[in-house]
Image (tube, rainbow, N blue to C red; front, top):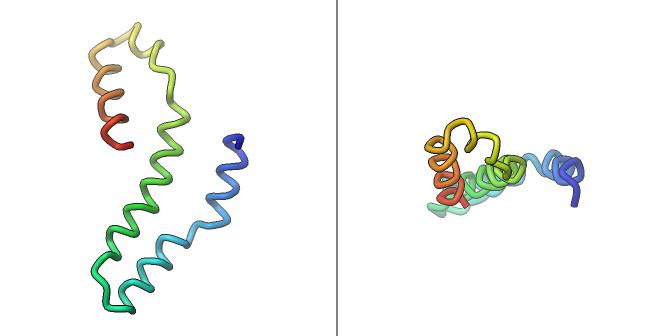
Length: 76
């Protein structure tokens, strides 16, 4: 899927995580925050995919590029 198609799909489903959290709370469950975090993780995942090339940053600041790459791996 192209990035534009993924963004369109995400915007058309923007309330899914909040709806899931609300339903969870109404059902007396304790996973509402986890559901919200999963929804947020989708957005972060999309953002991280758009920044895969760290070569330019590494040429300028190798330490910063390494730290960013490590953070990106931890978030996945």
